[in-house]
Length: 84
Image 1 (cartoon, rainbow, N blue to C red):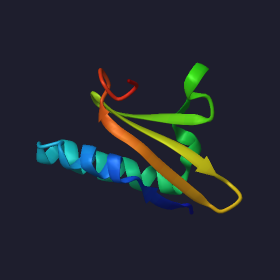
Image 2 (image 1 turned 60 degrees about the horizontal axis):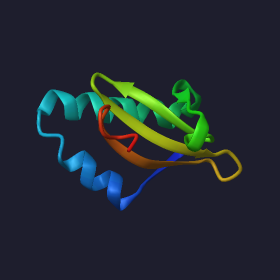
Image 3 (image 1 turned 120 degrees about the vertical axis):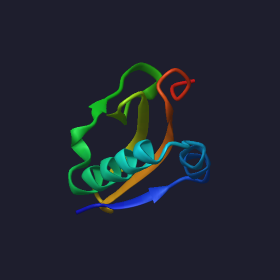
């Protein structure tokens, strides 16, 4: 199992998600990412090395540090704005 580190920006973005059922789905997704961080989609171009995990209309963007067993959650938000 990997450890999660959530950036301050991602924490702020997660707090902005208001609906309880979305928050529960994201919490469940974070647990799944801890168990197997490779479930997300590898990103390309300027986001190479990062992964994206879908949670409805939201995305969680993260980097995997296999050596240290850490997943760094970089961004979390609506799919229309999270990649900006």
